[in-house]
Length: 253
Image (cartoon, rainbow, N blue to C red; front, side, top):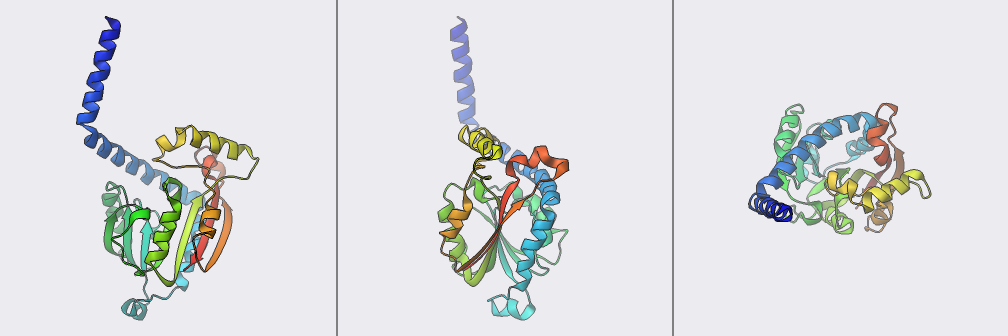
C-alpha cells in the first residue's frame, strides 16, 4: 500500500511538472536573472580594476559606420548582457545591441539603462551567442563578453559568430573565468563540481574548468592579447573562490 501511494504521488508530480513545464521554466529564468543581477553587483566590486583596464580599449576604437564615426561613437554588441553589469564601462554615446537567451533580464536591463542616458539601446536580441543569425555580418565595431562562455555548449561556434558580426579590425573584448593552474587544489575542486553537475545545475550550465585560452587562440583572430587575472577579494573569498582564476582578452578580427 505504501509503495502504491508513493508511486501515485510520483505520477501526479510528474504529470503536474509536464503540464506546467513552461511556467516552471519561466519562473526559474526569472529567479536566475534576479540572482545574477545581485551577484554581478558584488562581482563588479571584485573585478572593478580589471574591467576598467580592459574596457579602456573601447575608447581607442573608431567606428566603421560613417555616421557614428563622424559623431565619435561606436556600435557595440554585448553577448550575454544580463541586466547590464557592464554599462558603466562602455563609452558614452555608444549604440548598443544587447543579446541574452533569458527574456527575464530585459526589464532589469532597461531599468539599469536609465542610469546611463547617453547610451542608446538599438535593440535587445533574445538568443544565444552561438546562434545569433539576426545580427548582420560585419555590423558591429566591438563585441563585449563577461562571464558568458562558461555556459556556452559550443564555444568554437560562439567565437565564429563573434568574428562574423565584427567589422574588419573590430575588437572582441572579454573577461571570463577559466580552469585554474594545473595541479592546484582549486582546479581539482573545479573539475569535481563541473563533472558532478553540482555547479552547472545551480549556475545555469556554467562549467568551471574550461580552457578558453586554447579555444580563443584557434578562433582565427588576427591579433590576440591574453592576460591571466585573479579576482581574489578578501571580503568575498567564499563567493568568488571557484571563479577567481580568470582570463582577460582583446582579440582583433
